[in-house]
Length: 253
Length: 253
Image (cartoon, rainbow over all chains, first blue to last red; front, side):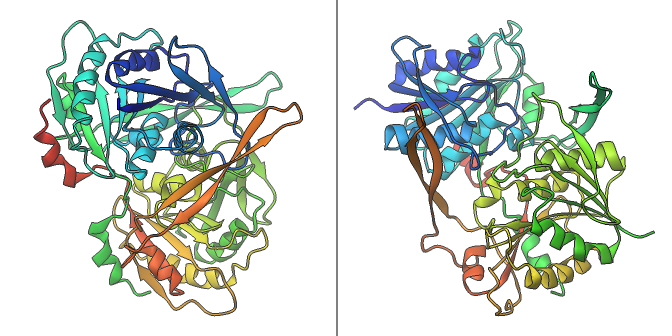
């Protein structure tokens, strides 16, 4: 039986990134696509609990079984597994995201949260992101390297309850130097809000800011990306700070 | 100078849970509240990037500096720190949530994501949840234990870049047995979708399902909650699966 590959993203079904991913995934097996019907960037691990969900057959990709979903990327994974397939796929692929998701961006990223949801279901899952926000970004080099990784991921040695956070440098004609397996960089957004006035003189805000990498990036995805590598961070959903357990047990509670 | 305590939640500003938290937090210092203007349960670590944000002064709590925000709990934290306070508070308190957030629910929970955002800002942060979904849930016992924990948290020994996921058993008149410091249980939702037809005969879906704890719960929040303890899971935002790094480096990439 051919493998079943489930594909989703957070930029929505009409983005170039998901089309690029479907093109290469087709070679490896049967495809099911369930993608958001609109952009869902920054939705993190959100699920839709107070609203209804819609699911519509989509004919956007010729010869590909595809649906749009009114919810988040994690909703797409849940609907795909529990409502459409009624079984677990062999591999979940999310992306390719327009924009990088290295370091702590893994927490904000809908693309990566879909992969983390896959890890919770113990399905080999990979989130792919390209460090280029443009809607017409060049995914060709990312496609080649993604193919390589998908081939290996189907070999049966995927770590249990783990997903991969894969980031590709923006493509400027220079081939990537290879894959590097990294840890998640300890780096953060320094947020700013752009405060504006609407037509009634009432304030509103746009979230903006700068991502600050700092100096402690050795062995991390940020360091490797800066050097021109594609990066893989194995990513887990156990958020327990094991290092803090013993100290905390000494508190006077 | 009195400590500055920042308070948010995901059930929205008019919930009983946040009122219960404000009541006890007042004793420890000055308070700033920025809470969602509507329920934001299940929003995980979502941020608002494709929409504007509104922030309105609220007079709902007498003598308390409070705002409503049109965004997610994480938006509330970011707006509070970067737009309103222009400085970091001494403690971030999120909740008290109507409904428990033990185990992997930490990923879906807006209440906990606000605390995780605080940890990224290296601010001592605690998310509180009560295992009772009712809007008139009894928070009195949870309040007593929360006070105890807040007092300790202000002592200056809070672990760096870590937040606490605190869960209280539903209160049935029986005092909690104490606090237990635990790891996050490895347990998952088995999702189901309730498929219905709208007035035009078109299908829509409600996410539902069952949380399955399994047998491997020793030392976890689920075990301790079941025994009547209030639980504390120290929680981090580094999601790197360090155990998988070496194995993955052997892959033929």
